[in-house]
Image (cartoon, rainbow, N blue to C red; front, side, top):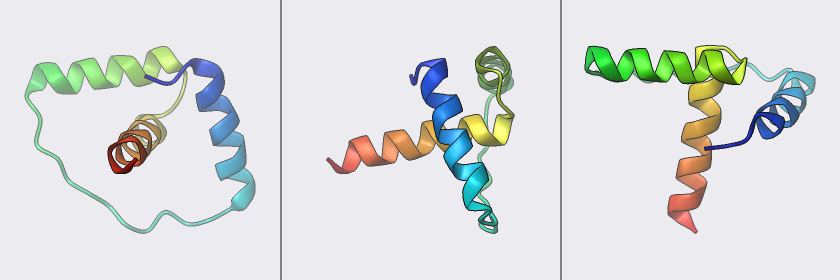
Length: 65
């Protein structure tokens, strides 16, 4: 998982770019997984969408290395 400072530095860059997020994905989750993910985003101090975006992008980049 990314440390909190990494979330904030990436968020600043994303915000400055002012790019629209137009694509979306739907994922089915078990209720306990949903709760865990929401708690992680809250713990990191970012929105659920931002947390998911950052974690998924990191996982995708790592997978493709």
